[in-house]
Length: 308
Image (cartoon, rainbow, N blue to C red; front, top):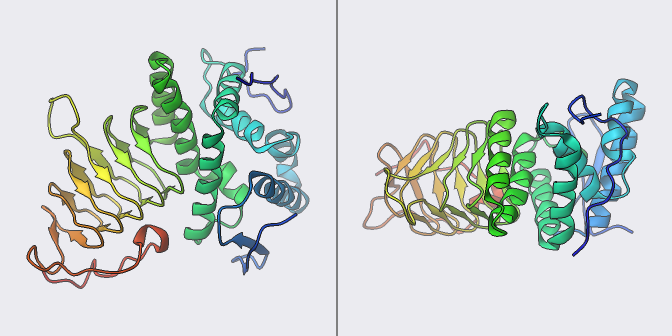
């Protein structure tokens, strides 16, 4: 098993203890052009993009040059940069950044699937969020992305039986980012936590691939009962802001849950649930369906013009 490397000491925080892939070219709101792949790119390609973007930002805004060098440009790979950034975000006077750096780097090095998931999550933000201007923008400043990557490491620790340390990471992520995901919860790849503030995901929750979840969403239980008691979210689902999904209910592939909905029942695939308590658009007998995957396109139609 690979061992964690030595921490790059450039830019240590005060709590440290002493060849391109295919894609489409887009123009951002600031006029800059960039390429978004149409399929999951290689980690090396994404890392090259991130470094190029950081170089550009350092030249355009010299005040950020030291930060960008310490966090991105001084590192030889995406895992090292991400580990460094997470460590400095989540450290405390008694939980040192050097310890967290080794922990995160070891996690991403020993489980290659974690790095693949990270790349898919970066691509999800770049493709789906119109305010995400670059991969480096997501890596450095999107707390939903950072909280999810920390959760992936915590989930690995939980699976390895290192539960006290996994719970410490959960606590720090909740304190710093305002996102509370139990380390036992299973999360797929290509997941977007948009804005992310106030997201709560319970212990036995399962979130599929290519899911988009907005802020103040709760995937919770219904009481103090133990066992399998949390929601199961299928691939390609969109969960609107402030939605609450309670109990061991299933939200099927490609379904939509409207903003502010309180879901206590199963939601069939490619249907829309709205309201409090939530009901299916079109009625339970013949709910209105759709063919797309709203988790990919963030299609919010049918939320304000519906018949139950």
